[in-house]
Figure 1 (cartoon, helix red, strand yellow):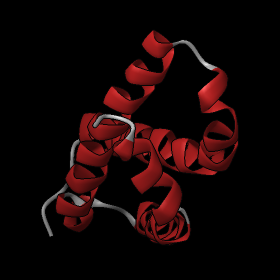
Figure 2 (spheres, one colour):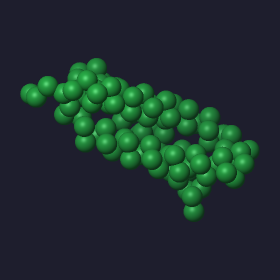
Figure 3 (cartoon, one colour):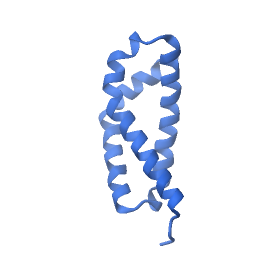
Figure 4 (spheres, helix red, strand yellow):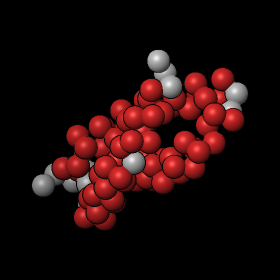
Length: 95
């Protein structure tokens, strides 16, 4: 297996941390989002679409991950499944 550069490993770590954090806070966001201003709400929705692109990037990068990162990716996959309804709600706000 080819050695993966430290910058790539650091990016993977960062993306995993951001994505896991976003999914963990999602239920609270859904409870509070209607109290936000329109600008805050739309900014969050836009950022959510970007986050989903990063999750896809992580899936494509799974072969480059070390064992710890693969475990965190599995945690992320579980979070995505657990919070699917909340994520769909957030995306529906873009309509």
